[in-house]
Length: 79
Image 1 (cartoon, one colour):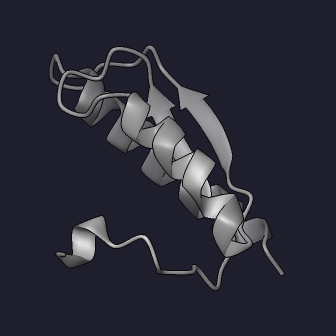
Image 2: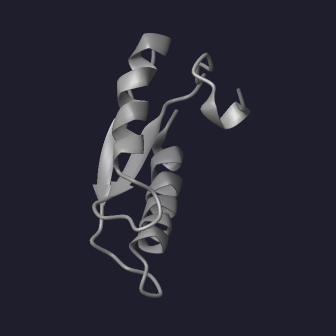
């Protein structure tokens, strides 16, 4: 099984997942499967819905721009 499909990995840091409805490159169900699987590893991630921002015509890129900025602000608030 490749590293991208491992289910035995446990994050050692806070986890937050970002999602934009109707992403044309990544299905939203990936986010919800990840959120459902992580509690078994002792992690309870939140899902933050972003958007409906598009960047260069892409919702996927729009979510990337929005989530990256939001992640930096979140990291700056962590102890």
